[in-house]
Amino acid sequence: MKQPLVLLPRRLHLGLRTSPSYSARSSGRSAMTPPPILSLVLPSETGRVLSIQSHTVQGYVGNKSAVFPLQLLGYDVDPINSVQFSNHTGYPTFKGHVLNGQQLCDLIEGLSENHLLYYTHLLTGYIGSVSFLEMVLQVVERLRVVNPGLLYVCDPVMGDEGKLYVAPDLVSVYREKVVPVASMLTPNHFEIELLTGLRITSESDGLKACNILHAAGPSKVVITSLSIKEKVFLIGSHQKVKGQSPQQFKIVIPKIPAYFTGSGDLMTALLLGWSNITLRKHQSLQCQVYRLCCSEHWQITRPQVLIHNRAV
Image (cartoon, rainbow, N blue to C red):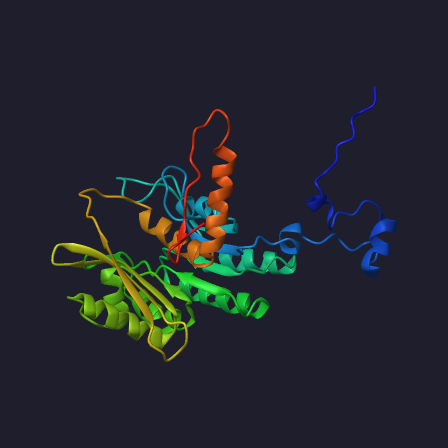
């Protein structure tokens, strides 16, 4: 009995070598030249992200919080787990392994040797040692050799509510070395005070702190939680042109009397994701989803999206 012929989608035919003679004919490549990496030949419209963060078997923190949402937004995401723990450290005990700087270097070398080091974004979260953070800075440099336009989104996880989570030596490395090379920073109230040396007691202080960081490096700064007089704010600041006044905004956040882990990691990932997606593309995707849902079994009215007071 003959086996049925399986046809691959046209996209998957690109770069696949069917025979040595075909490989030799196409683009003058030799018969021994391997096919191109499809994820590099056919990158997503949004980009390719290298995410260096923690990972837990149970629970959602670090890469467990960041990778899937970014994939849903259309990104290709390659995670490097800076730690591999059984559960997050808020539990009484945890077990696992910590990646050191040399091991991170080995992973980057492996990617480089196979020409897999092209990324549009680098995302980093909790980093527990100076040596590992110094290696991350080398990674930034190497990635920008391959792609000078690489965007580095850094969540400078150092502490919260006046308490440091990391060794004090890390603060100066973030302030002096990371801030100048970052494209976007997402500190909380305590962390932006550490980075700027400014005591923040008002909304205007928060805006001033953003300007200090703009002058030092990143064009985008988001203070993810600013607690002032029993209220919680998010302050965003985008300096499109160096030296010019940034666009700034605030969001008042309702305070929920509960403790959550991984929410900051998720938020930074979404800030990266949505900062690279245009409003029009989002509306197009939204309309496609509604069209898929609408059928004779679903009584759904097509939504109206307003752009500059015009219904579409």
